[in-house]
Length: 253
Image (cartoon, rainbow, N blue to C red):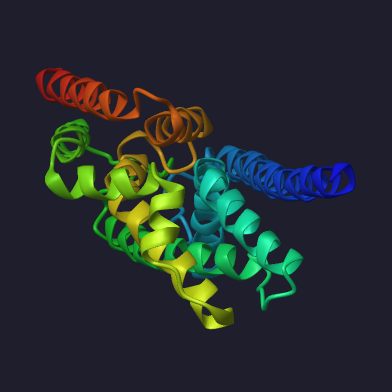
């Protein structure tokens, strides 16, 4: 029994370290990308008429890596629960699947969001609504976005999706599917609920600056808190009030 318990702790630690490592690499990429962007903007300071080039692969990669760094910590309990269930199947000599398939399905959903965010950024940039720092050029538009995001925090859709994200065992119990395709499907389904929970928060990045890493960290911490803290539901609502207040302040100022 001690050997089994030791193996369980080791497997859990391996998954946690893997998630932490991937998250750390994602944030390191963002810091390097931000430094490169600052250097580019500094070089363009003497050439104000020079247009900012829109490189689709780079922008898509930026969004997807950003989503990975922001969302994986909040998804850790769900991933660990899935891994524990698969580990028990393996111990009983039953068919099991790698946890990486569940994670892949989850990240595919955020990859889809990254495609939409890339398209939105292109439209905003082409219509001159986005500044060279990748933030909305109009504070009024930013204020409206903050108010809409704050209001979304109180919608039934937000509550339903947040409830699914906050209950890993219940989610897996009610939506379990066997096999490799089943793991991919469950991961994608969980990613879809997370997307429904957090898409508006991610859209706020257009108001504060897509590569404003301080705001990226603040939003990531807020997502983590509303998903994992015992008072997460109240955190979501208080955050909604704060976002609406910031939006009103931006409009008035």
